[in-house]
Length: 580
Figure 1 (spheres, rainbow, N blue to C red):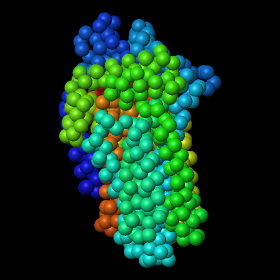
Figure 2 (spheres, rainbow, N blue to C red):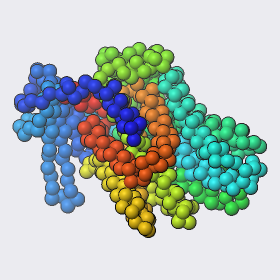
Figure 3 (cartoon, one colour):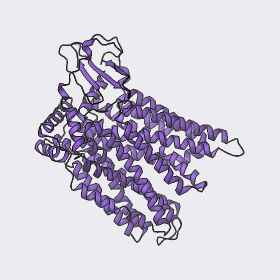
């Protein structure tokens, strides 16, 4: 428990030590109409954002929500005004409801055109296949470990350490890939090349591990496959976020998480099909058709126009938008201008030398400004809370309970299907004006916290009962945990990670978040049994409940809504949130 809490405390202190002390609250005066620079995003759901800089140099942010219910009986507008030197609710005058959309006048048309031509679909599908292959490894490797654990294959009888290494070495490969991507950055390696690299690593890894005559070569294949996982999990959310229409970005990045869950179910099914024959090689080989599809897609889809724009390759960015995403040249020009402006603004705030390649300079660039540090706090903080609230441990514990009840395979598939359904629910709601990213995180965290408190109470009471803990109650709490996780943390963390960082630091920052994800996952899995023996199940789950509650408070304080905004507009909103 101390280890988990220490990681979180250090993160907050290092990245955000000056935020609380610098926050001042005072009364809010009326909006100034002179020298104001208003920033607005307006979409079909009428969510509008205004950033006004008045003569007093206070950055003001207005969020106006005009929502209608299905029966057309409700029509309300709520305005929240913030200031860098003041923060309070205010009743705006009629002039404050006048909306200036000069910076984003074509946003609705762009989204409509993108949705109609569907040229973004191959780009999304190719990146999502990387998620499916990651999930397939989770489900497939568990089946392979079960088959090899029987000791009847040509690899002979394997001990628990060897079986554990087979299951976890791909995670090590993913961590190595994430670290390499922090060092390399995206100065020369674009999203397209990353997709191609991931698909090649997946294919080579599968061939090596499925054709290997010895355990050593199986582990080499697993490591190569893990390199593909780390690369794919870095590029997939980036590429989807940078090529998707603004009003579909949340849904598509969330569907990438659904692809991971779907891959887990496919892995379980492959294990069921080939497990009866003891064919662990068949489990691995069953993913080759998907890998070939990803290979074909990776060598066909366009480069990310935002990456090209960052490299000042605007003509190529124009072609990627027109040919690959179906925009008109006018729409593409407007978006490229917005990207260029955002990049130049970041450089003006001291973002560092974008042409530098060393890991020190990459990290220096990430930490170079208070805006980058806040983005890193939000992104990495969510990743750490996602894992440290016990997700790997609860699912591992659930598998043991189901196996003891003789429901190992059936329960695993059932939980996988339930996770997939809840992820699809999240994908459906993430762009809904009634919900959005932050609301889903808060509701999901509430479900996680409640389930962990329930598990703690069940095991505490059950310890003194002759019949032990109530198994039906445990399973109910586990399902509540899974549902809450897949509504919130599961898809939304990766979504926010893909869109919260400014373009100049996005690749290295997402690599940092991915590394934190895999590293904290490994930490929780490694410490689970030790903490369970020392603390007992009741205190262990109570510890996770406290961390989940802290995650709710963290989300409420630091995470802001990004639904409907372009990535460049999110950069501007980040600045407003930090300065207020």
